[in-house]
Every structure is written in structure tokens, then in C-alpha cells.
Length: 379
View: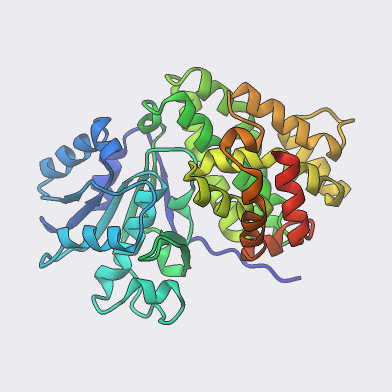
């Protein structure tokens, strides 16, 4: 079996992200840096120190801080208006996954003004001119978007479409756990669970390989140990540093190996009820692990069990209950009904999930009926 591992992004792990950003922008002319962020990051006071540092370094950044939680193509085009008529050489994303994905789309459009992003989404047009350099500074430890070559943006009608292309790899990802210190416990838990599930699904993917397994298992070990502490004591810089690095490891793992049934179900579930993605995948995890357990080979179970810190005698059949206990410790719902799932919506959510490409990489084949059964069991 052949596998490939391609990861051109420079990872910078630091407690001084402002200095590292200036270093990454060395020799950049004034007025050429486009900062993409959101209102929450700006309100939390995270954005201004970066702007001050850039101005102190002789740069005059363009700033767009209105990225919504679930950006669509019109939101990307609105951000592009900020850069209209300006010569931009670099895009810098300061924020979570939505900001990162928006910045990736902007990088493509600035590199090719004739490009219609929605045509790319629907695969009616190809990316031919690449992207401007994009630098990512994540402010959450969850999505892993800073290390993936995919951007998930809704089309003009809000339908989520992932664009996958090597040009979407960031030039540099600057990981600074101190930027997540202000993240409240509920978001710490939700984003952390997203990262954990990225790593579990990457490890249990049919597309997994020895290289991606290194990142997936290290992420699982780190998150299961440090997420509960980051949740209970958000001021722990050590926990925050561990989590932001683990989220990147998880992102690298799933970007190389794909995801599985949890994320296939989460797309239509979260879209139906406008759920935070982390809450959706977390609530789905126990039922999906119950379903996947019989298909986990003994050798992969031994590695996964050890990474989760479970006793030697633990069997795969106990994985779902482990997930329920872990969620309880984070004050997160472990039943889909607690996240709003209505019985009458199950057939449509299941049908949409069964059409998701990533379902084909799940360790256990899942039919439409299986999807319905999982949603009913998890409710």
C-alpha cells in the first residue's frame, strides 16, 4: 500500500507570537499586510497588540475583523472589499477556524482576481495561480485549520463546501498558547473535543498511515491529559500550550488521513440546528464509538487504548462509555437530544450524512440505515 505525506507549512511554537509575526513579515513593504480576524478576537483584546507591533515595525496593516462564525462566499467577498485597490503581499489570520478558512479563500482570490470562488467550490473551475502567502495565528485549540490544505466556506446559499488544494497550506502557523487564555471553559471544552475527535477519527480512518499515526496518537495522549486541566483552570499556560500544539498535531493527522463517521454526521446535524461544531461532534462521539468498536483491529486498539490511558484489560466495547465519562467531566452533553436532535429530523440528517465523502474512510462501513440507527441510539 502506498501513502504520501506532504506538509509544507512552517510551524512556529512560541510564547511571543507578536515577535514571530514580525520575523515572518521581514522585508515586507508598508501597506502590504492584510489582517483577517473577527469581532470576538478584537473584543478580547487579542488583535490590537499585533496591530501595534506591526505598526511599530513600520507596517500599516489593512484590517478586516468582521468574519462571522460560519462564513459564506458573500462574507469572503465583503472582506475582499477592504483590500480593493491595495497591493497586498501577505494575509495574516488571527482567530479560529472560520477566520483561518476565510483568510485561505482571500489568499486565493488576491492571487487571482479573475477567480470565482464559488466556481471552485463546485469544481467547475480549477485553482491555477496558487495563493498569496497566508500566516495563521490560531486563538483556539481545536479546528487545526492552520495546518490543513482545506478551506470550508458556505456557498452563496450557505451550503458548506470544502475546497481542497495544496495552495491552501499556510506559509507559516504561529502557535502561542497564551492567546487562548481568555477562552471560556465551555469553548475550551468544545474546541478541545473537536481536536480530540480529529485525532481519533484520523487514527481509525481507512486512509491512516504510519506517518499520520504519529501525530494522531500524540494528539490523543496530550488532549486526554491536558484538556480537563485547561477546562478546570483556564489560566494554566502549560495546559494551554499543550492544547494548542495538540490541536495542530490533530489537524495534521486528519488532513493526511481524512475523518470518519462522526464528522460525516456532524455536518448535517450542526447545519440543521446551527450547533457549534465542537458540541455537535462531541455529542455524536459515544454512539459512533459504540458502532465502530467491533471493527477496530487488535493492534490498532492496543495503540489507541494506550494513548487514551485506559487499562490493559479494557476492550473496544467500552470506548463509548469512556467517551460519555470524558464528556461528563467537561460538562458537555453526551446525548444528541441534549443538543437539540428531534426524532422527526433523523431521516434527513442520516441521508445527508450518508452522502458525505468522508464516511467512506470510516473504519467500519456505514449505510444509510446505520446512520439512522446511530442517531436514534445516540438520542
